[in-house]
Length: 428
Ligand SMILES: *Cc1c(COP(=O)(O)O)cnc(C)c1O
Figure (tube, rainbow, N blue to C red):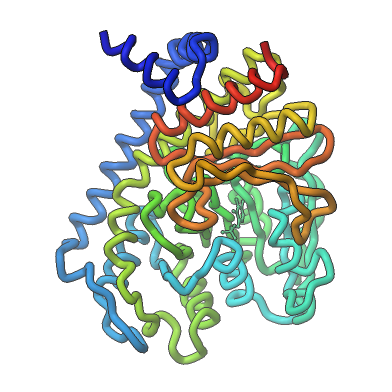
């Protein structure tokens, strides 16, 4: 029986019979959820193949250009494929967009001018955006260029504060920024449907305002994207979901032609825009990573739900719960102590294909007011579509966990985290 061989193999890797038993029970409970996740992946896989076929993807699109990167047909085809998948007029998909934060910076600074105001109707944006916008005083921020910022928080119950959103849309409001994922916060993640409702409400008040969605961690979790429901711009990182684990760098900006062009002009130079930007050799992994992305995202989702289910069973508070519907790949687990956080991260690290011999320790981090511990053994530095976890060492001791290129690696990582908590006597 293969079950016995598997059990023995897990045991040889340090997973006890007891931990394996608890986890197998949870896995069995999730089988219907897994079928649902597979259906979303199937739909998105077809969507991507259709876009690649429509654009006659071929060998000639894989080699890269050098220097200025004129006439890079691989790059141009890739951008058309992205535009088709996201149902937009245009796309900018570049290795020169060095992170999600950079892609968001380019989308914002390309489309805003002095005197314009940004409104976030969904509360505080992702940590790194605080510096970009200038919510916290930062050299080079948009605030230094005379761009102002307004914010309306979500209500206690996670609903939109319609009344205050309406009041906050003024003559100077040029761009609305909507973050789909909760990021490393504890607010609910927004479904594409809710984002669509919010955009419709805003456009009814002010049709010419630019609605931009920070789509990080959300791509291919549902069968539609925010651009299917009215978003003018959608922005994300290629070392998260849409890179499928293969993109070694990069970001994307999709949306209305005018707004994408404005971003391109800011990325390169006025008068040049999308026409330049060598791809050097990343076209092939960009295409192949995109091709794999729906499957990879489904693996990360299975891992997140498995994690939620087990830690719920062990008595911890998890967000989202194992039964809630999901709109991104992030799982938060409140572990109640620094010791438990370290044990959890040790487990994730010990299960990694890369740097498994390293012990994560807490250390000060720029931008944080406490020590932070991170676990990642990734092929691509900082890639958080790969199995990874990070936690600020402060009450309530919540660890944020995401990724898993393959479900079996994700499962092994969770088993190992439970094992470490078990070995430390934190769970029985
Ligand atoms: C990761 C993330 C970003 C920033 O992306 P980086 O690639 O880490 O710079 C922005 N917004 C959200 C919601 C994210 O999850």
